[in-house]
Amino acid sequence: MTDSAYFDPEHTDVKKHAAAGFFFSTVMQVVKMLTQFLSVIVMARLLTPTDFGLIAMVGPVYSFAMIFSDLGISQATMQKQHITSAQMSTFFWINVGMGAVICLALSALSPLVGMFYHDERTVALTVAMSLLVFMGSLGNQHGSILIRQMNFREQTFNHVVSDVAGVVAAVACGYFWKSYWALYVGMLVPTLFLVGRLWWAVKWRPSVPAIAPETKEMLTFGMGITGGNFTGFLVQSSYNVIIGRVLGDVLLGLYDRASRLLSSPLNQLVAPIGNVMSTMLFRLQDEPERYRRTFLRTLDVITLAVAPGVVWAVVLADELIPTLLGKKWEDATAIFIPLSLAALPQLVNGCANWLFKTQGRGADYARWSLVSAGISIVFLVAGLPFGILGVAYFAALSQFLRTPILWIYACRGGPVSAKDVLKTLGPQSLGCALSALALFALHQAPALPPLVLLILGIPLSYAAALAVVACFPAGRASILNNLEFARYLVITALQKAKRTA
Image (cartoon, rainbow, N blue to C red; front, top):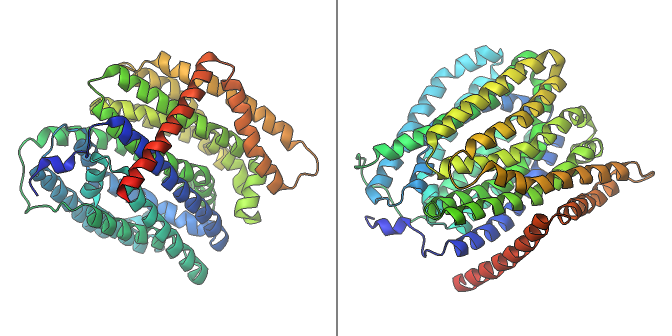
């Protein structure tokens, strides 16, 4: 296929694309989030902290490989105004070539991983993880085509189907096998499903390997994004490697589950919104005021929808962890509280990255990532003498410290200012404070069973937050705008579904 128009959306109405994208992404991701959430609960009951600790030890190796298998090409594909089939083919073969090289390199270096951890089990796991890198590289470019086409429904559906298949496979293996390999199966199955679905949905096929013209600039931008992602990887991997090496696999398993219980569903919910927003903001670069309004409204919607839920999880953590994961995971409660508290700035800071990527500021993104990584490593080292709880609390503190620095730097260029962000998030921060007070009061109520307490806490947290936000003129306008957009979103999505049917 040589027609470059194939890679563009079917129409140019960005608002309609956004509405359909948000609707289908939200519906599908709610299903995906619940599935992943249940998976965490079920697998925690089937396996032991040691099983999760082993996967967490090898996880940084896999994450490192995944960063360099893509080279930021997906972001470069979305960022370029016009792209040809020849350029797409060039990037496809670069992806596949990198996937093959990394797969072979990791397999060759796997004995070093076993020597580092003094655990032979990590050798076979590293080889198995390397195969996932190569398999994933076969679908990277097809996935970026769907996003560039703003075909969010198909893109999200593919991920949901793949993840559900992976969860079912992992639970089945965990039930019958009772081994850490069940967690690997939960990664292998969705990778295979996703690549197959992408090739089925995207009819474009790569041509023979060749270097297309005008790809150097795109690769330069992509490498800037890769550099930023790499430093972010260093932070997470440093935590896993150092905790596993210094404190052991049991504490690493507890830390991993405490971190993922909340971060995993949040990432599943926000990630597709990021895909929608990145594509939209790329196309609004020549309309600064629309860019600004779109970004701030989305930031407002995300925080208003998610922050009260995070507060609920933090305040009621001592009831939440044993109820969901079982008594054997009670020791994870104290770790869960600071890590979940850190999810609030982490959620907001993830939106700041959209500014770097959609304004073509790959170098700024890489520089900020280096600063952020330095802060995180310093706080990790500072927390280690205090054990696993010290690591968790210092990690949370580093997130709150980085937040104002990040937003000042991210808003120094472009139509969105730090004052705009503060005005958007101020009322919601006060709303979270009132939510916490209301939940503390509910927690003191006598004779409430844990499950009843958790169920009652959710609407209470959101009601308290909305009550505070509604006290501000900007907050009332925000609530009305969000309700109106939700109405438009549903109507547009239903019309699209009707036309498709």
